[in-house]
Image (cartoon, rainbow, N blue to C red; front, side, top):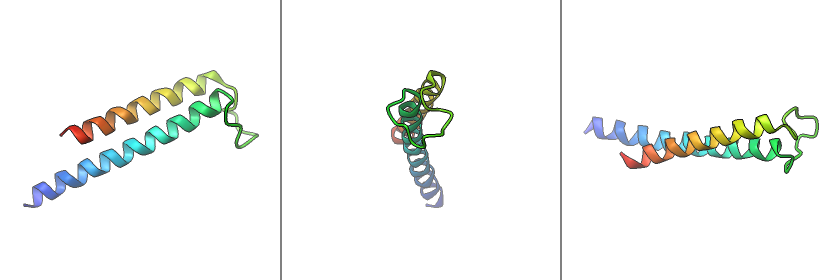
Length: 71
């Protein structure tokens, strides 16, 4: 029975980490595209390279959520 509890814990942890990665990625995308200018002195504001990195992070987070829910 302990093995099943461990698997459930890992699945919940994967989904939680994936959701946090999606949220962080979207935040970076919004800063990189200039939609979100907070904090104002951030080096990521209006920098397309950060928008791409944020999109990649959000996609990786989506894959982690998908894998965590699939098993």
